[in-house]
Image (cartoon, rainbow, N blue to C red; front, side, top):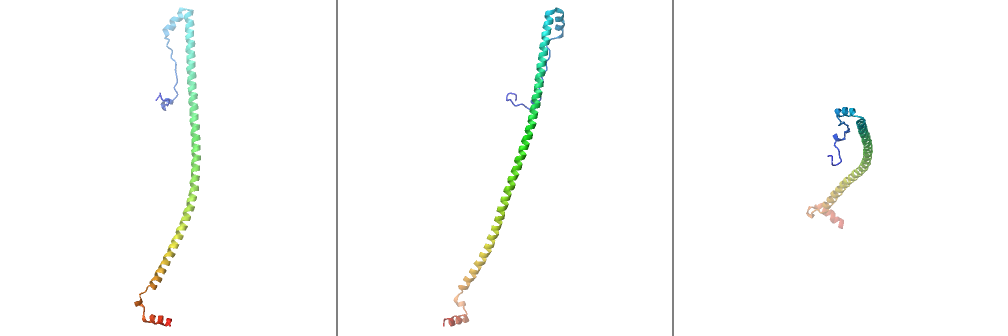
Length: 158
């Protein structure tokens, strides 16, 4: 994807430039025989070739420096992100521990209240059973009263 500005990993490798001379050897040989004008031209061409080669070497050195800079930046960024992630994770576990303590306290309170409710339920059942027994005792049919109980009842009235 060269148009979007993002490079693939293979495109990120350092691209080096090279310079190849387009002047062929026979023309150089004939120009040296031709006189001072052509030797001056040859000298200018050599100077241009040298300047072009120097520029290409400067570009390649600059690219190597850029690559080294980006590599150092990436490594530094990885370390910083790793450190930050570690601190964030440590803080997260501290919060988890704090919440666990609160939850544990609430569960302990809940367990105690459930035990109290269970105890009160048992007491309530006992009270209900006692009330039921008293109610049954009060609601005994009159024909079930024995003659002795009737006599005791009459004696109490007199």
